[in-house]
Length: 133
Image (tube, rainbow, N blue to C red):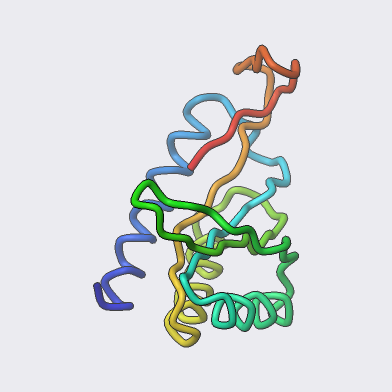
């Protein structure tokens, strides 16, 4: 898929995700933890992407190794930002991170966040946050 097409699809998805989270009652004015997901089969490329994301101002977690269903191994990390759940902010972040992924030849796998509010209960830890992707 071309970078331009990926950008357009991601922007549409951003709108849909934000609308769904807010429609479920998540706090519209809260600061959200936004986790942008990256993966690659080549660790060195992924590491370069992580360094560049850090230089762009994102918090970057340690890369993890994951075994896929077919037995192959990929490496992944999250570039984390904290801001309101606004489509414009997400579109801008996704655009710069998709371009970063293309430049470093790694995969940008979208973003996720957590529900903030008291509508959804998590039985495991009594948290008021539930994961959204």
